[in-house]
Image 1 (cartoon, rainbow, N blue to C red):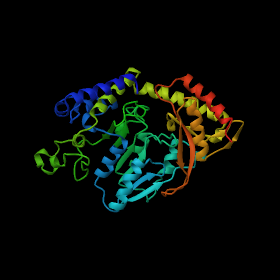
Image 2: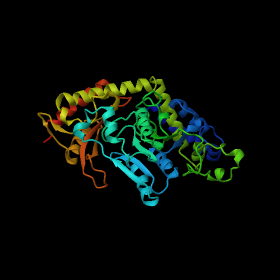
Image 3: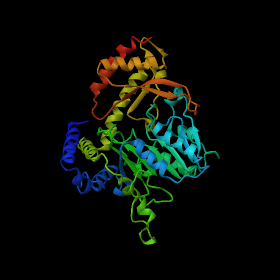
Length: 401
């Protein structure tokens, strides 16, 4: 977190502690309704205040969404085998409790993923077949944490419409702060629901997140305000007041939230604006990520997992399998080797991550996993940071195997 974010978080907690009752009830920055902060986040994302609910994290936003939608037994949900548990867990609950039919589409194998094109990938994942057509929801990620694949939101919208899928629900945990969510290709307005986190690429505090809801007037019985104190507002409505209480406002009213954290997230947003705004930050992050990708490709192209040939699929995440530096054809996919590389780099003050990737074609819960290295290039990184990483990685990989 930048110092301005840490300072905002500390000052917010001190202000709250000095008079919690007033802070909760009437303070414009820390109050339970969060009107001011929701408005500020909405402007940053290019949408309206009543399209925004501030949450604790992406998982909370996705749970609000999937548990709130009025699914019926036999409804189909289309998803992939690379989704985070934030999507998989509520879908499993609904599968067992409601009787949803979950159609899990497998990603292509890692060996072919790095050179695939956007159209080919989307047609492979979501082909126009009767089994997928007319599903109730398409539940996918914007940027996949295990591979670095970025799926364009406009392309996902087009695919959902092509398959006559009603709702597009997106896990955006790896997007806000990395990508420009007001751009034409990745506009948040392409989604029906988009949940994201303020503590990752945005560099905000923990327990700060955003849920975007395209239809601000969506109401029961289509959508219920779970994790909320305001169901009574809908149960007692007359025809004259039927559209008077936006669902995002209802979801925001849920007792005492991490309002100092929401305020500090706004400091992170201001930091991003001062750094040039989302479009400039995206260019910076992707430029550094391209440098990392080119370094790996120059030595061991067969080890690359993340897409690199189609710029539309690239993100600030670069994923590759460890390999022997002096024998780059020797690639390792086991957890022990990946963890060793992570540990060795951490000793050199470089933080990367060992990440598990479900094998292609496996949709069950007991699928086998290959382990790779994930490198994130953020707003605070520089070209010299990447060069230092390249030198350190070479030293570490000389010892692998």
